[in-house]
Length: 270
Image 1 (tube, one colour):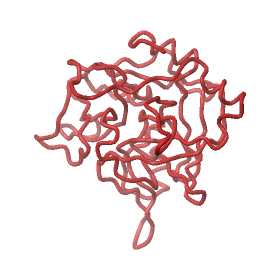
Image 2: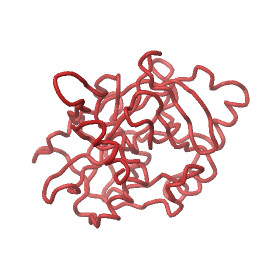
Image 3: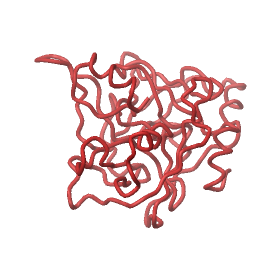
Image 4: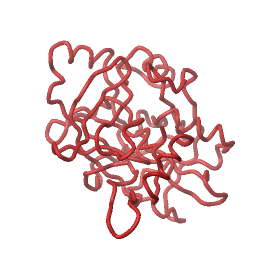
């Protein structure tokens, strides 16, 4: 699902999620310049002429930006053309102004995208019109990395760093509950919970000290490791989770044969 930026009641938000794509950072902190290769898709998609955050993503080659298929598929479904969509690597993109650095793009949605839970193929690449200068692309994992780690009990206690531009944790009190948004690139740390054929399931329960993602972070990276152990490897792409953004971050693995079959058409694989 696309976890969108929204300032509304939870009940209304759940209804919206049935039809719309995304994901955002919860219980985290401003990223600053820690992850300059993480950017955001900006589109005129909700109101004509108004540029708003759609999804997050990561530069994986000088002219290739990785995101979630449900983000680009949504644009296709509602008929938004390429010239109404951009990528920005600015740290703060809300509101979008004349000074916001917007890069023109085209996108390719994974042909295998199917919205099925077994393996939704939820990946897309955004092709930048020009190569990005001065930003080092992130790395992709080796084939079968997490199966290998899991077989050796190497995922127990493993942490992951999520980065994105989405909304923050639910705020209550003084009226309807809302998911506040400020358009700032944020990061948080999640802990390994479970390994599935297509997914990593990560705890983002604040009661256990974890943070995670929420509406607007879909397509964003979950880097392997955190703090001093963080790597440049994107383990998985944020795609879904629980509606209150408080329990589980469900992320699409990039080390599987299906993911690599798609990505190998655009970048060199490790």
